[in-house]
Amino acid sequence: MVRFANVTKRYGPLTVLDALNLDVNQNEIVSIIGPSGSGKTTVLRMLMTLEEIDDGVIYVDGTPLTHMERGDELVRANNAHLRQMRSNVGMVFQHFNLFPHMTALQNCMEAPVRVLRLSKEEARHRASELLEMVGLADKIDQHPSRLSGGQQQRVAIARALAMRPKVMLFDEVTSALDPEVIGEVLNVIRQLAGEHSLTMLMVTHQMGFAREISDRVCFFYAGNIAEQGSPDQLFGNPENERTRQFLSAVLDAG
Image 1 (cartoon, one colour):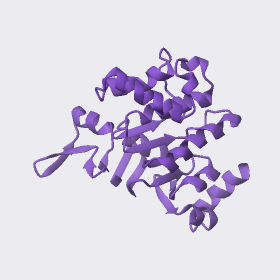
Image 2: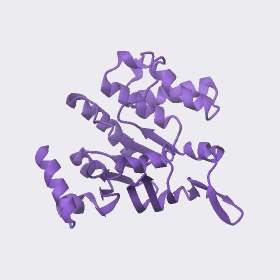
Image 3: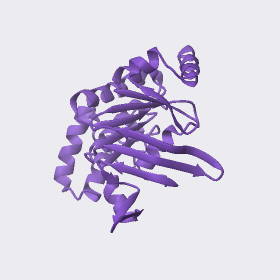
Image 4: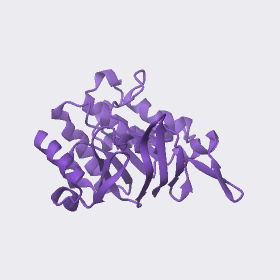
């Protein structure tokens, strides 16, 4: 469903991702862990086309995302191609990014109406169902300022799902939340994983949650995957010394 083929990203002299190769299968849940500055969030931002890549190609569902075919060649994607491909990917950010002047329902209706050209009635029905799914049926007419952080993040998840993406990205979705509401957001992601056929990439510092929910965990270090494997293998018996050091530090801190 997702393929990074020798993808490199630089900021001036700094190489953030170095010839990254990563395949994510359909309906697979992959957690990305690692120290700050290792390139984790950059992976998600490039999938959302929020960052341009310098080398390599990214594919989504077998189609180039960052490039497009012109004859027998792959050339850089134009804006029309990027807009079309972007609808396959939904992202939930750590800071919610809700429209403050819109209610929860309106936040979830906006993109389906504007981008997918759904009728307002169809978009309202879809948004209502999703807000009910994330436990906010009684909050649909509330503006973000009237919602708790956990409730805002659940609206953000419903909003991303309203576009019916093939791939869902979660970027540290609990890091801006108070500890007592982290569980309610993680429960929604558990529900998504258990009940819906979605390919999911998750950058997280919640090691216990990553171990519980993931099919595979990738440990990033210095712009590449230093180690990857099943949760039991990577958390229980890591082979890479950097992985061991990182897990020892974060688990002791937790």
